[in-house]
Image (cartoon, rainbow, N blue to C red; front, side, top):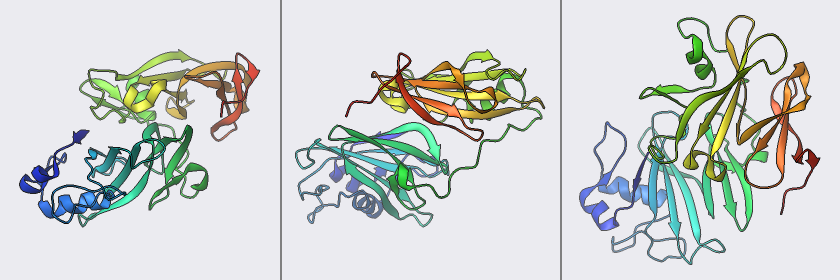
Amino acid sequence: MRRIGYAVASVLAMGLAFSAPARAAMARAEAMQLYAAGGFPISANGDHPTNRCGAAASPRITFVDMNADGRKEALFIDAGPCYKPDGRWYAIATQAPDGRWRRILEGQGTVATTGTAFGGWFVLSTTSGGRTGQLRFDGTVYRPAETVTAGAPPRPQAAPRGPVTGDAAIFAAAGFRQVHGRWESGCNDGNDDGATYEPGRIDQRRDLNGDGHPDAVIVEGGLFCYGNTGAAFWIVAGQANGGWKLMANEVGIPDFKAARGVGGWPDIEVGGPGFCFPVIRWNGAVYARNRLEYDGKPCKPPR
């Protein structure tokens, strides 16, 4: 991931540094089109971007591939009195094969990745005015997660057998890949490298559902990837044929409960900051939210 925050005068004079290795710089016309797509059109005199209030703005732009298609999206972050009540604004633009940029999300407050994906695109978490929500990409734009149900990603399948064996097969089933000798899910992209990022590791190995086959719990950490929670986990089930199957992936810290769902799979409390946590249960197809608990008792999250 690469962040840019150059003055527009420099952008237009020298070209915008671009993170794709095949391209060294962004031409003046494309830089102007990118800012416009992000909701920050260049002023009439060409001096600076303007925000939605018509005032001069200096948005920070981060390029990150949000759907693993090899083309990086542009995330705009800006701050100022124009944006009430939070004083912050975000927008995301994606680039079409013809090179044109278009906006797929904008809003008040803050935005972050949840560490999970839907239909191949990052699921996002937004916070504004003290309220938090999730967004999914519907094929055209990001919308509230509860309104995007079509085109759901396929159910997890067992990792193929073959040359991938041992721990590598477990990580492969969870969608991890090796980067510089360590296992990564892909959410880090170098942003937390050397700071808060903790690469994937197998935290537990045990038979979780009593079927006689070993299962594994993978954990990964990082503030950029997982916000204040700082961690995510993956449950990977051992199969009778020796392969592995991804069962669950959540942002949080897993706490396995005595209660069980279909097939003997244990309920999992997804812990994190706060005093009321979701408990998910295997329903035969996916791990889905079953209830909210704190210290084993029902609870209600604060509003």
